[in-house]
View 1 (cartoon, rainbow, N blue to C red):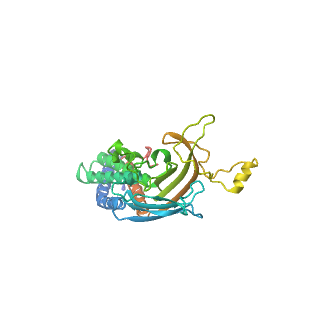
View 2: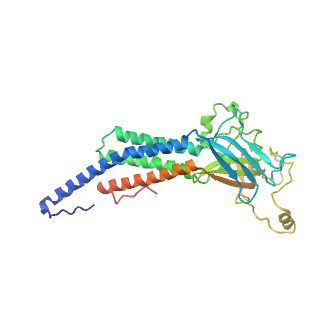
View 3: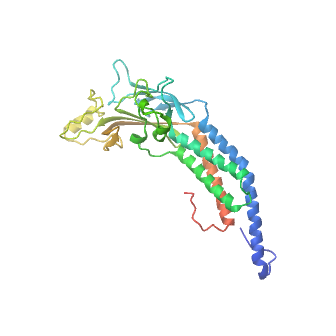
Length: 335
């Protein structure tokens, strides 16, 4: 903003004219921001609807260039209410008479819900952003620059947190994955009322085998499923009992790879976690095979795009207010 005044003011009144111009600029900016609140609220309500709609969304799951994993899940809001996955993995032999190993979410009314914690978090942040908009519109002084500045900071934080929840990232699958209760990570203590339900409320029917990790998460507004087959780490000189089934001799490697190893060659890792050891339900395990499948969710993609656009708009409003208030030299927390 320029503070040049034409015609030129006398030096004695220049400072007064500059302050008057800044005051008028601040009044106009605050009024403009207040007029934008209804539009902002409507967009946030649209995002909240996309994240909490009861309309079922069926998402196909299929591994690329292989038959390792085929199936589907049905998402309703933050809950996965139905799912059927067929696995064909060398380390997971199918039951006799079947072509693959089938994982099915239980349809019993007593079965626990498979809840996606990231969507719960995103929905909560959008709800908090709506509360900030209402507080800005109906409480406080719309002409108080300090109040509006604080509200914009809080609004920006909640929008960014909601976007981060849909963007996702690397998760500790062995800590945040499903357990026997079917709950996801941080929601465990909320969704399970009693420790007595720990082992009799299983989400899969039949129950998920002990040597399979089923990890469902959100990444870049897509539903991502990781299936891992596990084996206990054998400690030399000990005979530690294992709860894993050991009837299968499948190693996950083809004949050519096993022959090369027998002749002194090195075994090539089949995935990025092949050489790592993880703590899993009280024991150390290795990942024998790992399959990753993702399915784009149109509702989540739309919500993420809206949140990203809102974040940019609020960031511009904050920068404009900082300039008028003379805080353009301060560090920004937009990163």
